[in-house]
Length: 429
View 1 (cartoon, rainbow, N blue to C red):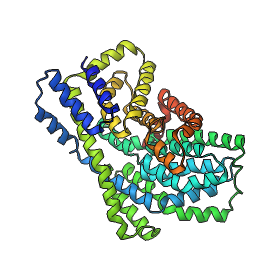
View 2: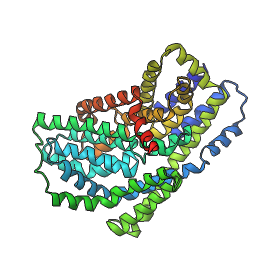
View 3: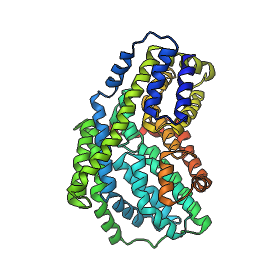
View 4: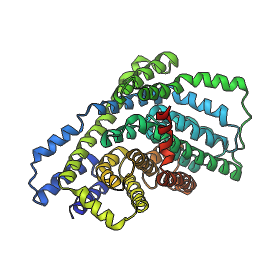
């Protein structure tokens, strides 16, 4: 009963347009007061503060700042050029370039919004000039931008590792195969669209010299995830230390290698990162307060009993899990949605003897889909603005792309080895 009151009230307040931070705190305090629970209000403040104290969360603002540096520092431009000489000759070539560019840039930014904005500002004008409709160009960008959430430097992966206690280095590798599979599925749709509409028959094949020149130019940017993930996997530095390395490397590449940024640009980038990080940390604290109430009132236990009545088999639990995460992600951004749902679903997944790394990948993949699900979604609105397209135009073109990625999510959900075999293979070396 308490679970229905808690979540029903929360969704009612959130859907009414109340900012997420205040919705979380209002529901937590309001439920305690309305139901006559004896928990002291001071306990909520202590859990709020304690929620943002763990040292690992220092990596969040650092990775956000590194993403700002790379998004503004010309890295995206070089990644797009590299992808174009490799794949621009295919039918639907610019669409394929968009997918590959988003995947590569996602490997250095870890943010879907930064990925969408950085690549979209470069590729959308070229796609429209080639003959793509604004709706399809925006739809493809909105979907491809979320590949960043499954790449090794994914910020949601970092937060999930903190919440669940799984190894960040294992989780970071677990997303690579699902991300690659999603990219391949999107590439198939792009080739089909290019052939069906005839808007993009591809460029001429690039010469070996052109490919080498583009690879050399993009090399410093593409080297970043290798350095960061290599350092984490080998144990040379922790996730928090890797974030500091990402900032240092991003500064070096942007200021001294590409020289697209000057020292006078740094204060504004720091301010942008500070604002975004502050928002994330406040929501993490408020979510921690609600998670504390959920824990002490045994809401997770109550939900586990309900799920056992409804989902008697593992496949049924996974189906409910996917639906719940997708619906939650439509209304809430990935990080707070993950923080809110993980304390509820992880005990249930453990009851079904499921791997926590696999659950983290499935959870993040569903939240990625929610980012471009009409009528709301972070990457959806960014792509619409960049392409000058309405949500209605985008919606008409997004369904084949969504079907492709959702098919991959279902495969990853019901075949855990798709996400687990690569980190296990690396561990066996």
